[in-house]
Amino acid sequence: MQLFRVRLTQQSALLTEPTSGVLMGHLAWAYRYLYGAAELTALLDAYRTADAAAASPPLICSAALPQDMLPRPPFNYLTPAQRTALAQTRYADDGRATLLQLERELGRLRHVTWVPRSILAELCEDLSAVALIARLLDAMPQLAPRIAGGPIRPEAQDAAGPARLDGRVRTQPGINRLTGAVQDGILFDTNELVYRPSQELEIWVRIAPDYADDTWLTRWEACFALLDAQGIGARKSAGSGRIRLTANLTAVPATALPAAAQPNAFITLASWTPRATDPAAHVYRLDTRHGRLGGLYGAGEDVWKYPVTELLPGAVGLLPPATPLRPVYGRLLADVHRTRPEIVNFAYAFPIGITLRHEE
Image 1 (tube, rainbow, N blue to C red):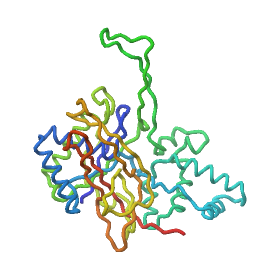
Image 2 (image 1 turned 180 degrees about the vertical axis):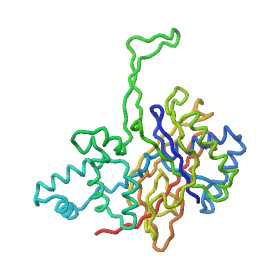
Image 3 (image 1 turned 45 degrees about the vertical axis):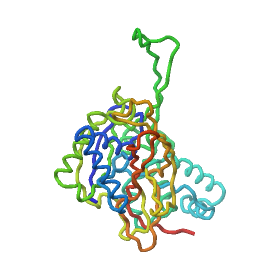
Image 4 (image 1 turned 135 degrees about the vertical axis):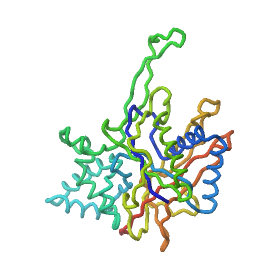
C-alpha cells in the first residue's frame, strides 16, 4: 500500500475525538454524497472482498495525530529490578528516596498520550519498556511542561507538542424555543476537546495500488476536502468540529514513518478490532465505544450503534516467527446496528514495524 499524509488544523472545539473510525466514517459519507449510494455500496463490497481474501482494503487511515507525534505504546509496568536499575541510572544517590522520585515521574508519564516520531525512529530497531520509558522521562519537560512541573515558558510551550488532547467544559444557558430568549434557571454543560491553538494535525493514509491511480486519488482528495467544508464529529452543523486542511492527500516516502528492517512486532496508529487470524496483542489499552450514526442516518429514530470494544492507538502486536509485517490488520465490522444491516465500523489497524526486545 502507498503512504500518504493529510495535514489540518482545528478551527473550533471538537465534541468527538478524531479517531480513525470517526474519520473513516466521515470519508464514507463524503463518498456517498459526492458519488452516490451505489458507488459507496461497491466500495464497501471491495472492503469485504479484501477482508475475505486477507488482502489490503482500498484505503485506511490513522487517527488525527499532532504533527511529528505518534501514539505512545502503553508500556507502564516495570519489574522491581527494572525500577531499581532505572533509578540508579537516572539519579546519583541510591536508596528509597530515588525510588520514590522515580515513582513520581512514572506517574506523570502516564498522562503522556503521544511520543515524538523521532524517539520511535530512534528506538524502533530495539524497543523495550525500559528504553522507551527512560527516553520519555528525559523528554518530559518538552512533552508535557504542565505535568513535568515548574514554570511554563511560552517559547517552550510553542515548541513542544501537547501532552494530550485537553478537555474543557462549556456552560450555556437554555433557550426557550418559542420566544428565542434565555430560559431562567436552566444551564447545561458541553464537553469539548481542544488541541493547542497553533497545533497542526496529521492523518496518515495507506491506499491499495488499485485505488491509487489519478482517478481514485482525485476522488479521495475530494472526500477529504468535503471534511474541510463540513467539519467532523457531533454538532458540526452548529459550528463544532470545524477543521481546515493545510495540505490535502500528499504522497510521502515509506521512510516518513519509523520502521524496523526486520520487525517482530508492530505499533498501530489507529483503533482496531483484531480478527481471529491477526497477531496477538502484547501491550494495549481497550475502550468500548457506543457510536452514533452520522450523515443521512443521524436524525433517525434509532441512531445508536451497538457497543464495540477496540484496541486503542499505540497497541503493540506480536508477529508470529518468520512472518512478514502486513500493511493492515483488523476488519470491517458488520452487524453493529439493530435495524440497519448496511451499517459497518471501520476497525483496521495502521501498523508500523518495530523490533521488540523481549525482557525477562
